Amino acid sequence: MKTDRSITIIFLFLLVMIPLNFYLIFMVAPTEKVMGEVQRIFYLHISLAVGAFLALTGVFVSSILFLWKKKFIWDTAAYTCAEIGVLMSTLVLTTGSIWARPIWNAWWTWDPRLLTVLILWFIYIGYFLLRGGIADKFKKAQYSAVLGIIGYIDIPVVRYATKWWKSIHPLLTQEGGGLDPVMKNIMFFSMATFILLTIFLFLFRFRLARIEERLEIVKKRMED
Amino acid sequence: MENWSYLVGAYTIAWLGVSLYLFVNAKKQKGIEERLSDIEDLLKDKE
Image (tube, rainbow over all chains, first blue to last red; front, side, top):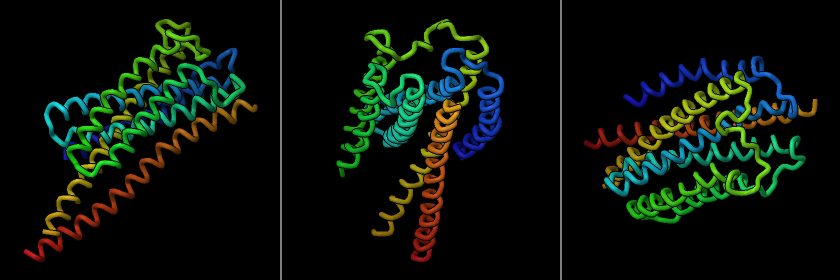
């Protein structure tokens, strides 16, 4: 019931924020001098990455809580976050690739940032393959929690990849990175919109996961 | 002009992806809820 109300409230906020975000990106944000119009992908690409990192942080925290408390609700939260993390990182890779084509003249390059995000994506695809391969409920939750924690090590590697290794990926997120103040404010608004969208997707999927679990319990009762 | 196609493409794919995810899960939820209520009705009848 509490989840339902939260979903409705966030949905109402998103109904206002998403169109406003579009308006700011396409009508208010100035056109970047070197890249031109295509630079507007930046607002989407960065915001999706923030959403992905938020969801994967959710996997990390929930996995720790599962191993500590041994309560299945944390396992449900972890795999729900992982699903959203995979969705968001797939979109990060896709939008990045579309942005790279006119700017770098290639859909893909083996740049450290791109490579580390791809590794991150494979880790969480592996997370679901692992879950699919284990029948025992507790073992499934335990092993995937361990992978969820280990996989999170890649997040700081992704963040600092452009600093640690030679990279062609722009350092637009660094503090005071020469970004126009209007662009910066619109980027923060876009990030806030996608953070809220990530929370909405999580609550929506989490509610479904709980209903699925209830169905399993009722089915067992039926068999007995 | 060509750059616009990449810009529109990126936004379309991203929002289609999110919408598709929501649509699939909403449909799944509807199906499960129907099944759940059917089973619960059956259980009530049994009792």
